[in-house]
Image (cartoon, rainbow, N blue to C red; front, side, top):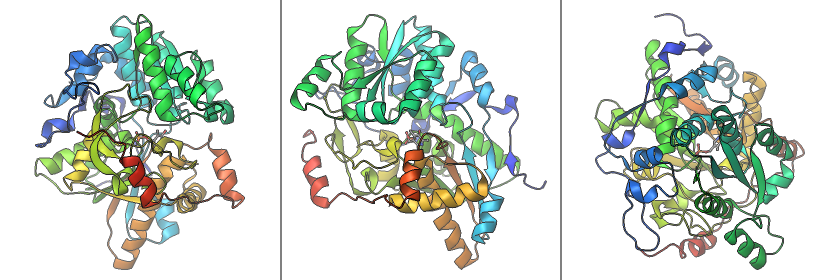
Length: 454
Ligand SMILES: *Cc1c(COP(=O)(O)O)cnc(C)c1O
């Protein structure tokens, strides 16, 4: 066997030509989306007014195992994929661990994260359907940035509702979106009924992701030729993100490496779901075993402290109901510095795999995450996104356990993005003024009490 290089690159022709749908191998399927008014399960056609048709079909398809990746999307993927699987030799040395650590690096594109993998797919299907444009929300701005790149490529209009506090505090990400031609509106705005209502009820509010989602959905359904797109949580997004896991598996297989542990950060569950899909598939088919760990922030612990129930996906309660591990749609996470991990719920697929015990979950505190981020940055050269650093933290912990036991485990984790737009968070850490808010049981119970009774 050849020596393992620092970076395992696949060739362009080894980019997967189909996405893998892990639902096809699940005996217990993730629960269907429900109509919030009638409580009935939604069919693909029920979703057509909100989402593009092909994406709606992908959303409800629990049976088709492989979806061919259209050539136009593959052409775009070739500009920044395959992404490298990096052997973290320098981190291993720093830790003095016998473990072998690998990370799949998705930050090598201008959006700086894995979100472009699904953004380009969603823009493609919107274009194919002959739409004029799409609407969406963005919190910290990673998804809006990825989507603006994708819509620019296909010549579509892109309207982004950006949580007001981020709009004001993160002008750089906003300007990247505008440079790619998107219009960016601080949310809550006066453009929509729900925005006007929230502004009236809560004058001077900073906005929230749940509220921006409601505004974007309203904007999509009230303008001719527009649909709504979402960058995480949905089954279709996990399907597109399976490209991460398929490439990871191909790269490991190329060198005969069998992963023991697979670790990913979990906000809405899209990078984790995409990374683990092919591996979870092997487990579901009884072909292999892996120790899979979802890592979430202690400030927003939906898997480790939430309930597995039907809940609203947005504050305005206009979206379908989803069964997921949730903290309640009214849960207001403390203003932590991992914007992409602050959603109250979790992908239905990841929720179901977790509920069945196929994967486990852990939560980590913010300052511990930044300790790990800095350690990683100083030896591996990449400034990691705070979200990604949740996975780094647990990978380091597991590698240190191997040091005690002398086990040479193969640890694979997802490095979802870079942290150049998160320097205010690094500043807080460097100035030692970062705090570790953890919600009380009482707070979580109060929020969960508002879940719909189904
Ligand atoms: C959005 C984001 C995440 C979290 O989203 P998931 O859907 O849980 O993957 C993680 N890392 C980065 C860099 C992000 O931008």
